[in-house]
Amino acid sequence: MTKRGNDLTIKIEDYRYFDVAVRRGWIRPVTQDRSREMCEKILIAALEVFARKGYRDTKIQDITEVAGCSVGIFYKRFVDKEGLFYALQHRHYERANRLLDRLSAIHESNLTTPQVFHRFVQRTLENMIAASGFHKALVEISLNDRKANRARKAHIKYAGERLFDFLVNRHELPAFPEQSDKVQFAVSVVFSMITNLVVLGPGPYALNDKRVVENMAEFLTGFLREEQHRLDQKRA
Image (tube, rainbow, N blue to C red):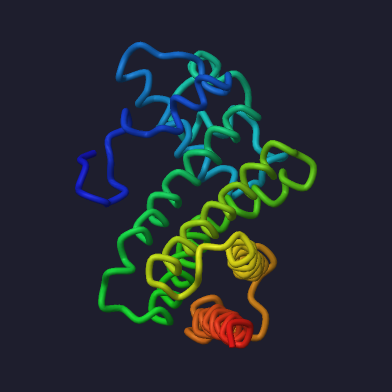
């Protein structure tokens, strides 16, 4: 894989999640590139199997069959299935966070703030749909697993912080903690709505119905305008 600017296509050795996973004991230390590549191959296979069978019904052998390796190789690379899932979760969130990092520069673009909201919601929805099976497994394990739930909340918090940075840089909101908390709450609502759609299934609208994105983008726009109006009244 090659690295292209802000694209998500990067070399395996550039992923920070891998070093984090090794430090936390989820992945065993490796010294060769091919060993690291095998870890990545197993993680990609696990993503497919978890999506299809769920976390609890997935066996190590199910993953190794898809990865094309032995169970022995799996245990040379990973401590256990739980560690594999934590590493996979961090890998998934790192990729998503790199998309969110683009908000740090997009405030200088010609896009209007409502258009940025629309893209923010659309990309979030598309990413969740692309890994819908994984998100179902993630919700399943997060109900009883504090580590997985903390990582999920940390990712949503990161999204809220990046969107708040965008709004501050664009002078839409002042850089006050109160505004940061409100933006964080609004982003949490959007993520919860999208998660419900992806995990529990669509309601009145299909997932690919453009009104899904439009309605959530309008929610963010309405939140921003209401907050700006409140601040104007407070200054008057």
